[in-house]
Image (cartoon, rainbow, N blue to C red):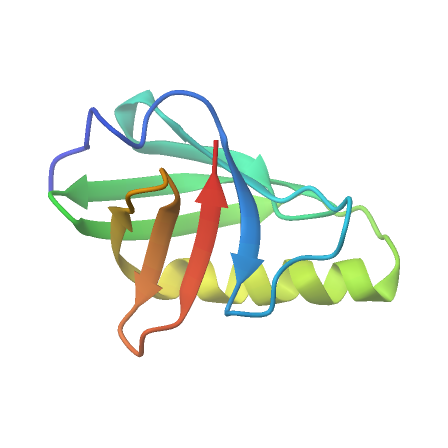
Amino acid sequence: MAHDKTPLLGEEWIVEDIAGEGVIDNSRATLHFLPEGRLAGRATCNRMMGTYQSEESQLTLSPAGTTMMACPEALMNQERKLMALLPKVESYRIDETGALILMTADGTTIVARR
């Protein structure tokens, strides 16, 4: 797979929905697609890093790790849910509103915006 040059690269994407359950108000989960297939962002409480590969609408995310800060249980639960879904992502699309929609094989989605 080749690394996609656009439209994933650029400013970070702010996660606004995880598996149809939204996100906790004022929590900050982000995805930042960087050159050379590098992935960075915030899982909610912790910084995360990893890699990605994309070709057309196919996408593979490989989170490699996070920092180890603790935060309130609800935020940790949100972070765990996001980190569990990321490696399951198989494709993406950007809808007519500019939202990035990451999709797993079973149709579960993560939605983010710039």
